Image (cartoon, rainbow, N blue to C red; front, side, top):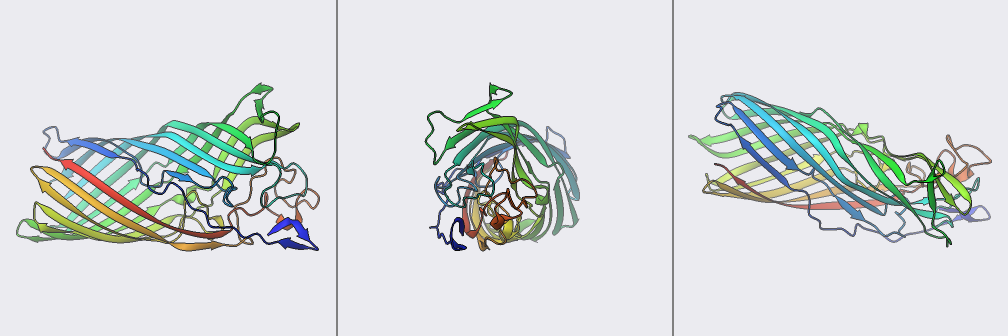
Length: 404
C-alpha cells in the first residue's frame, strides 16, 4: 500500500510480479580430509577442510520489489580442521575438532531510502533511493566440535556431537553507494573526520549446534547387511538477532546533505531450530555395492514476520537417495537430495522488516507525530518483506574415498 500517493485517504495498491534467484545451479564448497592412526591402536588423527552446506550466492533484480531487502548476496566460508579421536575397542569413542574459520568473501547489496524529510516515506521507488553494496572478509574465526559414541550392544550405537563455539564474524568491509533515481554531477562522497573513507564493519554470528543419533545395525554373521539411523538436531539460531553494519563515524554527502552512517541494523530475531532425520543403508552386495535413502523435517529459524530472502525459513521437508561402489580400497558415492519448504505468507500489518532510511529524522521509537509518517508508526519505514515466499532446493553430491 503506497500511502505517499494516497487520494482522499486511500492509498494506492501496488501489485508486483514474482522474482527469483538468478543463480540457480552453483558449485558448493569441497570437503577434503586425510586421517591416520600413526600406528597407535586406539587413536586417529585427521586434517580436513570443507565449506558448510548452503546457498552461497543469490542474485535478484536490482529494481525488483525485493530490493529493499536484498539484491545480491555471496558468502564464501571454509573450515580448516585439526582433529583427534580415541576409542575403547568397539565399545565407545571420544573426539574433538578445533577449527579455523576463514570467511574469504561476504558481499551484500540492497536499496536504502536516502530521504531526509520528516514524516515522509516512499514505499516503492522514492526519489532518493540509493543502492548500497558491502563487501568484506574476516579471515580469523574459531570454532570447535566435540563428539562421542557408545555401543551398549553389538547391534545398537548411540552418538552425540556438539559445536561448542559459535562463530562470531566481524568482516572488515568496503561500502559503496550508488544513486538509483537521482542524477548527480558528482558521485556520493564518503568521509570520516573530513577525510575520504569507505570502511565499515559487518557483524553476524554462526550458531552452535548439537546432534544426537541412534543406529540399529543388522548383521548376518559378521557381515553388516543394513542399518537404520534416527537423528535429532538442535541449532542455537536464536543467537542471531540481527545483522549489523557499523560505520564508525562515516558520513555520506548527497546534494549537500550530510548523512551519518552510524549503524544499520537488519533485524532477524531468529529462534532455535530442531530437526529429525531418518535413513538407512542396504548392502546389496556386501563390501561392493550399497544403496541408501532417507528423509527429514526441520522447524523454521524465523517467525513469518521476520521472513527474508537471504536465508529462506519455513518448515522444511527433505528426501534423499544415494549409492556407493567400492573396489580395491576406493569408495565412490553419489547422492541426490530434494528439500521442499512450506510456503510462507507475510502481510504488511505483521511485517517486521522495514526499509532502511538512515537519514530520516524519525528515530527510535519511531512514534513522533511530526517527524514520523503516521501510517508507519513504530518502524523505520515502509514494510520491506511483505509477500509470499516459495522455495525448494536440489543438492547433488559426489564423494571419493581411499583407504590404505
